[in-house]
Image 1: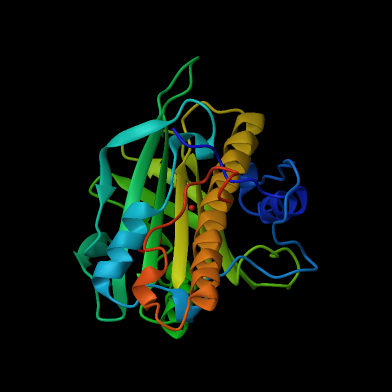
Image 2: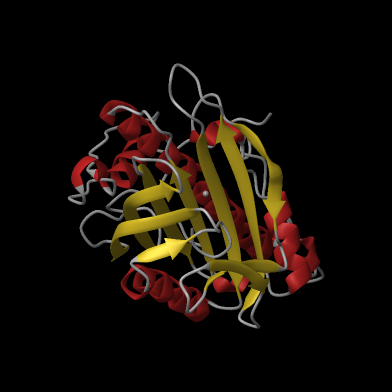
Amino acid sequence: MGRRPVLSAAAVALLLAGCTHSGHGNDRATPKGTASASASPSASSRPYTLAEAVAPKTRAEAVAFLRGLTVQPDYFGTGYRRRDPYELGPTSWAVLGADCLWRRQALPSTVLASLTRSFVRPGSGGSGAVYVSLTVTVHTSTRQARRDMASSLEEPLRCPQERLNATDTVQDMTSRGDPFGELRNATTDDDLTEFGQYVVAGDAKPRRFDWYKHRLGPVTVAATVRHAAGESEQEQSTLTQDALAGVGYVTANVDRYGRDRASATSSATPSATPSAAPSTVPSASPSTEVKGAGDE
């Protein structure tokens, strides 16, 4: 298994600051975290991003990019493993219908590819299982990615109760969106955060539900966390912190891909062709040195 990319203390702190929430009862969380320092974006530098000039241009390139993107179970904390089925996509994604039910549909013409990876931390010590999903979507342009972010922000307003399937519902969602440089967000071009309740038919008590979505140029990275029954407030905060840090590792990998592509393009000789640039995301090792569209 590869190693995690290194996030700066500033980047992690700014990511985790987005978890501060004044929502519904026990949904409130204000976790804190640190990480070892590196040359990662900070409030005074640039955000993690992916320039359109070096982003995938065709469906084949987008699929290769998604398949090569490093996403490890331990990005989201200890004890996670791949869930079965592990992957959904890359030619379909989830759409919230007019009836507020999430369904998988074929990709629209504005999306090149979308891939969801799912993980589970089995229950132990009286707590149930925790489920995390990570969806990376490649849009045809930054403009289309921005439209997708705007649509996601409006979904809780359109559907106060979102049905994941016949038995599971998400409700009481509180949303917030921030572009780079405004208040709490200083790691990607844009981000969205939602907190609410995850209700399973037959269960007396709702569980916490977290959702994050970040935009890097024409690419979006979304993650959901379905918390376990029986968690303490401290356990909820820790899970939220770890999951958001995991999203940070993935966005760092996307950013690294873009910078390596740009570097390869700028240093190419006149006889070189665009195909000489890397076609997949580099390893996450220090030596070479992510609900939403598809994760329901």
